[in-house]
Every structure is written in structure tokens, then in C-alpha cells.
Length: 114
Length: 116
Image 1 (cartoon, rainbow over the protein chains, first blue to last red):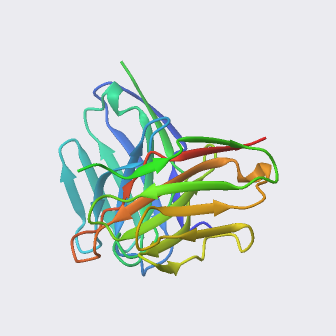
Image 2 (image 1 turned 90 degrees about the vertical axis):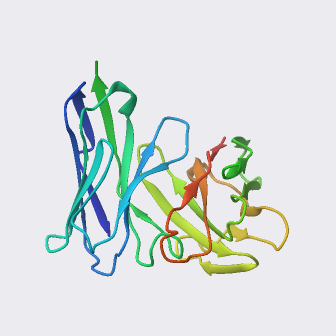
Image 3 (image 1 turned 30 degrees about the vertical axis):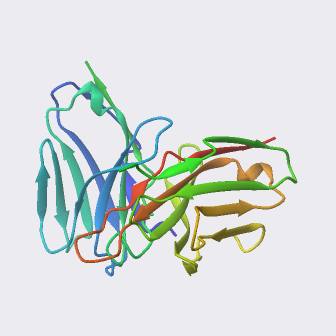
């Protein structure tokens, strides 16, 4: 049973465009929702994270939108750049991120064309 | 402050051999997690350890796999009698004390295991 569903599987965006990646979860006990960025041959790196008490969080060009009632959250990358080309994973956890395992989506491979 | 260290970065084993993967968490971090990533897949949780204790091993196969995080030294993920299906990237992550606001899990570069 997949607890975190991520879409699309791949995404191609022109430089300067907006990249949008969506995730849906099932377990209402999740209380921490991070997004990770992974480059080929590297480990995932935390990009931005949100807790369910807020509906939006913005850090630079990256924004998480969170809809608690729909059990969905999304990552928006504004002014997408070729350097953003990577695989992005959403995740969820039940005890914050530091006392329990993260449950990951299957990932979205983003390609930003110059 | 060095990040999470994993070694070896690449490991080749023949079927039936043992694989030992090491993880040194970030300085001051006492929580360690192991994840496995198959090609074109997301990361799957295997085990969560604190110093000298296994907290959650619900994601670890019951046979052939074991993990430890001793009082001194790195965390070790051990796979006995490897099979081709064990070929994957294994990532270690660490986090600090678990206090509110310190949620981030920091990932290492991974060990890519190939079973011939």
C-alpha cells in the first residue's frame, strides 16, 4: 500500500517557467511533510518542509502549498532554471522528521530546458 | 562540520557473500536511519536506530539483514548471503536529538551495492 502518491513521474519545463509537483497522502497522523532534491549519484537533500498547521511556506523560489482537508501538498518552483534539473521526492512522517521514518513518494524527474 | 559519511561508496559482491555498509552520522546526531533505493524508485525505510538501540526495524527484511549503532563507531548495515535482488543504493540519514524544530534528516551520499 503506497501511503504517499506523487505525480507526475517526469516533468519538462522551459527555463523561467513554473514547475509544479503534487503529492497526496492517506494517513491523517502524518505531521511533517518535507521535499527532497536528489541529483544523480548523490544523496537526497532537504529542500523545504511544512507542518500541517500552515497552508503555505515559501523559501526563495520554492513554495509548498498544503491542503489538509484534501490530504494533498505540492511543490512549486518559480522561475525554473536548468540547475533545478533533478529528481524531487515528497515525503511524510508521523513524529516530526527526527524521531521516525520518512515515507517517500516515488519521485518526479524534472528537466528544465534552456 | 562534516556531513553524513558513508563507505564504501560502491561495493560489488558475488551472490552468497556478505556486504557491510558503514555510516557515520553528523557530529552531535544520535539518530540514524537506513533507507534503500531501487533504480527509478523512491527511498524505502529499513531501520531506525539510536545509540546501542534499534528503535524501529519494521522496514527491514526478517532474514539476512541486520543493523547496529554501537556506543563507539559508525552504524553498520549488514547483509548476509547477498542475492541479486539486494542490488540497490543504500542511504543513511541522521538527525539530532528530536527536539521540536529539529526535524531534518540529513542524508549521506549512499553506498551502491551491486551483486553479481
